[in-house]
Image (tube, rainbow, N blue to C red; front, side):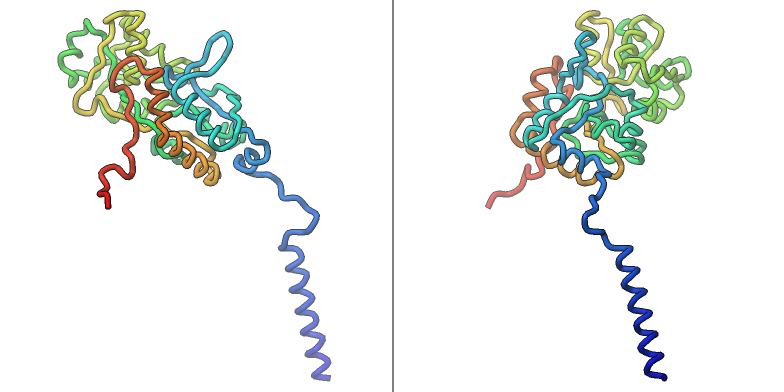
Length: 291
C-alpha cells in the first residue's frame, strides 16, 4: 500500500511539472509578436525618422517638406551602411519626440539633437556624432551686454526659450537671475533670433550657425557672445525609444563607420557657413603609441 501511494504521489507531481512546463514554454506554431522598433526595422528594411527643423543641422523646405542638412546626410549615410531605407516620417516638436518614440510613431529621432540628463530618463541615445557650438545671441547695439557678458545674469535681461528644448533647463542654470520667456513648442527656434533683433528679447542661447544664418539677411545686427559659461559645445545624438538597446547599438556602429570614413566632416563642410560652429568627436585611438 505504501509503495502504491508513493507511485501515485510521484505521478501526480510529474504531471503537475509537465503541465507547468507546457504553459511556460513557447508553443510550436505560434509566432512571437513584434514588440520593438528594432524587430520592425529588421523585418521591413525601413527606419522611420522623426525630426525637427534646426537649420543647418536639419532643414525642412516649407513648400515641398523635403528634408536636408547635416543630420539628414549623416543619417542617410549610416542607414546605407546598414542596408536600410530612411523614411522621414513626421516633423515633431521638441517636447513630444520622446513620447513619439515610446508609442512607436517613429523608430528614431534622427536630427542630431543635443542630449541631456532629462532626455536620458525617457529615451536611449547614441554616442555623439558631432558637437554644436552654442552661444548667447544679443543685439550688436546693446552695449550693456556686448561689452560685459556677466550683465546677462540680471533680472532686466530677458531670455527667450522654446518649450521642450534643452535651453529651458540650461539657461536658468547659467543665468539664474535673468528673466525667462517660454515660447510654445510649435515656435521655430529662428523666431528667438527675430525677436532679439527686434528688441522683444535681450538674449537667446542658440547654435552659432543659426546666428550666422540670421546675420546673412540682417548684416551685423546680432553678436554671438562667448566667455565663462558661454560658448560651449553640446553633443549631438540620435534618440531611440527607452527599450531599444539593440537599435541604439546598431546605429552606434553605423555612425562610427560614417565618422571613420570622413562623411560627417564632409556633411559639416557642405552646410557650415561660419568657422568653428561644429566639432567632430575625438578619435578613440588618437594619441595611441604605435608599435
